[in-house]
Length: 177
Image 1 (cartoon, rainbow, N blue to C red):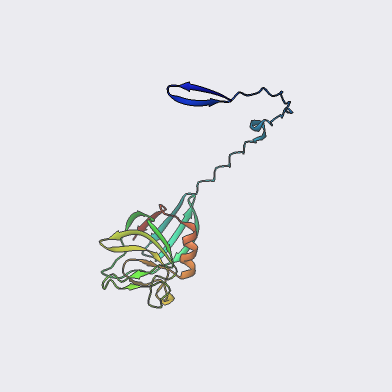
Image 2: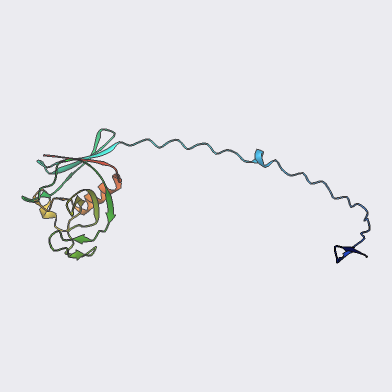
């Protein structure tokens, strides 16, 4: 070991002996670029043109896919003074087992309650003031086909569950007299 003085500091400098060279075996690395097989691009999913057409006069909703009628369901519609709005809308919300807020008292009824008129699904497509309008199930099938709701479209639970599987947020909803 040798000591040097540089700028007032003592530094120990080790004198290294040169060691004999060691022969390491040459390792061939694989060509990783060649190993990566590009995945084929998935075929684009066919665009399904889905829309719902509600005919208030015959109290039915029709589901169309690619301009072909796929299903028809009977519905209950808004009663006098609470008429279902007409026009062109889009699905805005979708909920499974929704809670219900009474439009007059603001009382919230939990999902699954016998007093909850929404049934198993909610497919909301418009609002008027604080009132939301949409498709939903019902606990009373005898009301299907009648004008009894606060503007919503009531359906049998099995029907609204089937419809729920076919639509998504953004699906057009056309409501006509």
